[in-house]
Length: 193
Image (cartoon, rainbow, N blue to C red; front, side):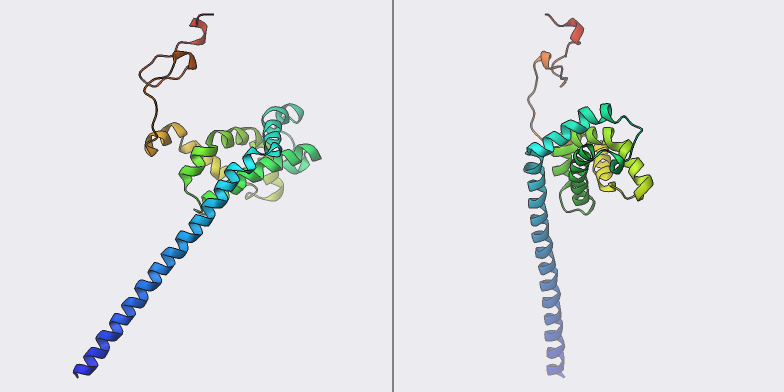
């Protein structure tokens, strides 16, 4: 009887040990995956965004695309080859970041703090071309890009700065036109020449 009770206690102890080991192993696996995904995100955010090809694509989309191919107009796939190449280059970059965000592969603060403004600028120009593409290809076309911009829009960087506790200077020169509560920016027409 006592030996049976000891066997039951030992079996329960072994079961608890196995469960604890599995839980810790899964947490360690998730931690390793997150670390790898964060490295990929950092690589995308730093290396790809500083290449000449990316900068040319961004410049084309923001400054030339609306002039050469005004919206509403063609879908991305209906653009001429060179324009399509530039648009696809930029769109797939932001779409990839949006995928990492959607699958929780990276901390959203990393993306919001790094690509918020630029992704919103690109989306503002590209939205009509992407929507025309969705009419042809289906509603999921570049949907992760839209997700990234949606998150960036609803988590503005100015709010994120406060949430993250980033340090800021107490005041800025008035000529910068920034209002921080301690200085008053002058309207441009009141500036001395």
